[in-house]
Length: 117
Length: 113
Image (tube, rainbow over all chains, first blue to last red; front, side):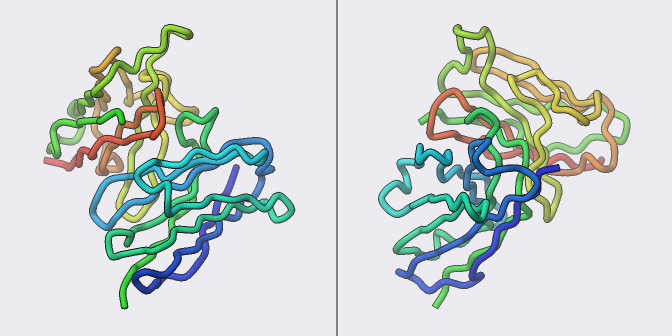
């Protein structure tokens, strides 16, 4: 069973950069597509982007200028960077496996990131 | 962007009764290249990540109980729980994967009456 685990700071100050890592276990990160999805407290889901280990990346245009997704094959990890954060970026951030770039069949437990001074 | 609209926002159903959730897309999700609709359904229990239930609008994910079924085509879709169980109390989301950005519906909260 594929396992995903998000990790990173739970508190980020406004205007700074949010950084999270997703560690994938029991599946090579090179074999699938991987995504970041977030969910503000009490609200719905927003897709941030997906990546393939070859460097193919697709971002949500609503965040495109602020978001970067990258991969570290040696560590079987994917990373997310979101710059110039504000309170609106407070959310639970999930990493998920995207089956054929379509739907998401495995999810991490999520990491709550709060943007506050 | 394709906008996904779910209805109702919430519903309360008695245990063992049927629950139906609707999802409408702003553009057709029917793919003529494979004759399939690019729509998935998820269940999210409190404090947990979403769990994939249905993809291609009506294909049940492995291990998902057969009380869950998906239907619809084009722009109008439904998720039906044929006999509601206590563990089905959750928020349900539809998601389109016809085009990027991938988008989700606003969610439907299912409770026990």
